[in-house]
Amino acid sequence: DADVTQTPRNRITKTGKRIMLECSQTKGHDRMYWYRQDPGLGLRLIYYSFDVKDINKGEISDGYSVSRQAQAKFSLSLESAIPNQTALYFCATSDLRVSSGSRTGELFFGEGSRLTVL
Amino acid sequence: AQTVTQSQPEMSVQEAETVTLSCTYDTSESDYYLFWYKQPPSRQMILVIRQEAYKQQNATENRFSVNFQKAAKSFSLKISDSQLGDAAMYFCAYRSPYNDMRFGAGTRLTVKP
Image (spheres, rainbow over the protein chains, first blue to last red):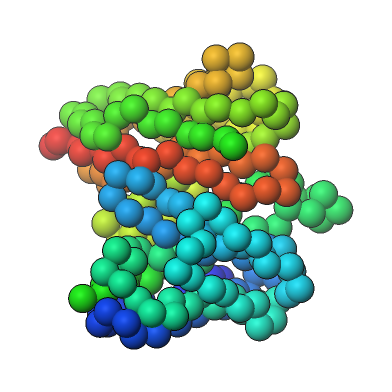
């Protein structure tokens, strides 16, 4: 099983609908992220969370909200989807605690959720 | 804010040849990490190689190596003996400790048989 799991993998919806993308992880990491990928723009950060009580906006948070239900779960919601939110969405986790002795800085990604808004 | 620039939207290489993908970044920090991620058509994000800024030695992972020029803020990826399976989108990324990761726009690599 994947360490970082995203559901759904693919979704087609209509303008104005509410959509939730879910992410769960078994890596035991504190930090979780939601990125959006668009052609020619790379990956851009939507929201990130350093623990259950800490939620932070990224560079493109407008039109999105998140919920960190537990250390292992981080959901992204589109309250009223619009066509320019059509994109590939990635959840990622990391563990950069110096005390862990593993200062790799690496992000571990889910397999992505492709969302199409008609 | 830190920015990452990949100036080559597309590159191509002949199988078994060598190709270099370019990346530059902008930062005022002295401690950070640099990464190259590969995204094949399966869309999975796969870490190719990692470089810590405090290390002067360039990172190497089998056929993949980097040329890290800290003063020039340059971080290029060299792929030797290119294989068909290397065809993918490659993303350069920057991360400072305890902060989020910033990505370049990506370079699409085609490998010709």
